[in-house]
Image 1 (cartoon, helix red, strand yellow):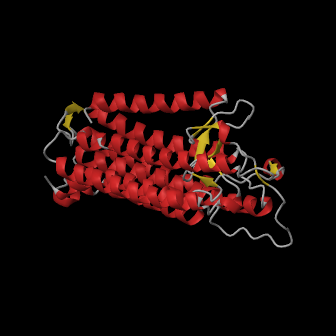
Image 2 (cartoon, rainbow, N blue to C red):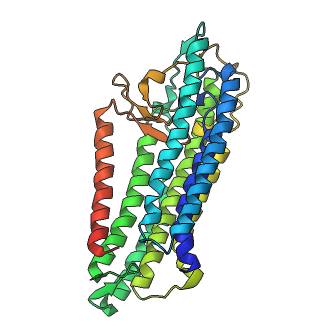
Image 3 (cartoon, one colour):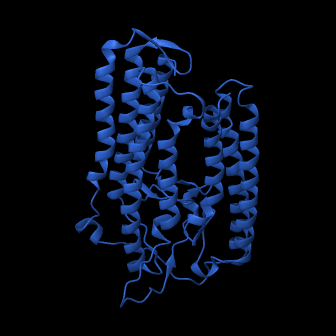
Length: 362
């Protein structure tokens, strides 16, 4: 077993473990494990205790599953390390739900929102002066796809009719080409399409400080969009590097087998760094607005619309996506039929890629 193969198998398990540990740190202070809390309760003893417990539990889970991935690599089929991600994620979700249940119980028992003025804030300028989608940040992904097409066109005539892929399968060369190009188009289209939807969705505005939170959200959206489109380009680069040995451009051995993983890993690190710096909705950014005092109110207690603390279902809300409840990102509103169509389209695209990969033996 080469070092490169070991890294390629273990890195995803390690990355998922690190992601689970870090999510509470980047979530809004008023959203604790999927539970809406007033600003003055953000440092309640039960919250501090559950954050510590969650960190220890998820760290142990990540370390344990990483050790399992290292142990089974080379002794089991190649798909086993990927399957390990499923129980690892399930264990992380279990830790989340334990913390959520305990915080929600204390919140209900002590009536944290009793006597508070709950308000909803909207920014009318979002329609008249919406944030601009960073179109030029699509250029790196388009450049990688163009380079892939150029290399494929140059190498295709000289390749044998059937290619032996890195997994040992003998498949038609056209199938390998189709899978690489389809994968690049998929990731670029999905990431850019999701960000287009988010740019047209309402911002996350805090009722206690609407002006500052609106400014922070604009900065967050700009930074996160650029990072996500850069990640799309890096994923496209990883797909190209995976294909080049099959196209007989070069051969990889030893630790060099990990080369195709590096652009993807760089994209994940970039996205993680941006999330750590900005926080959910820009909650960790500076949003000072001089001359405006904070509003006398708090966000509406909307826990009833969040199923299991993660899924948003509100038929009275026309929004297609809203800010995620845990971590950094957005969640679809499953009370909106269009969100179901969006989810179905995403699943169908993934299924199509999986079928194409199976047909190509990859």
